[in-house]
Length: 188
Ligand code: PRP
Image (tube, rainbow, N blue to C red; front, side):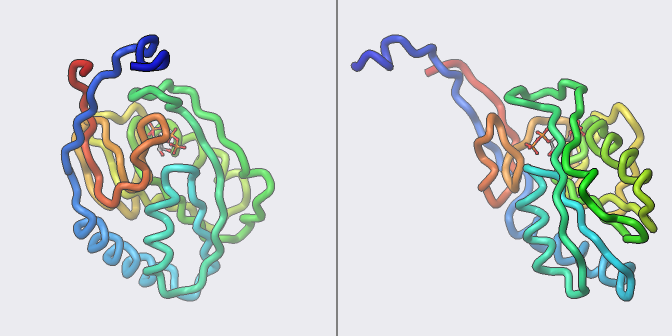
């Protein structure tokens, strides 16, 4: 036993259970891409990706969309290293974007309380966009604190803490291809 293990706190064990498989997610992304192509063909389309969690879903979705579009990124943060929303939303990166007359689809990994997306949409609509729609891989049912209209929705999920497909716990698990519930057991 070395000094580090003597002095470190016992860590609770983490348990992952698959909620959505990689195949389920890939199939749904194809369906969403077809719907976006049908709606936005011939229009000036900009996909605005909300960092960081939505990047994984966004990249998979972009590869499936067969019409021209511009990609932009904004960042929003509300969770930190906790599993519940702090309710505080900070948005960065919108001011530098030229979105006048653009049809914007916001890309999110998850709508939970809805506070993040509400904060971004409110700011976006002040920027002369032609339209704003929301595309979210996951919609956590029963967790909403504000009403949220999701034009392109991957899956509705129960009010559990989930990781994978871009979603993290303390920056871990974003790289999992499926979506998993994360629960904690007693320390080892
Ligand atoms: C997560 C997620 C959404 C937001 C949803 O982001 O990516 O942006 O929370 O929660 P809400 O509907 O309750 O506002 P997070 O703040 O964890 O940042 P990250 O994407 O950089 O991990």
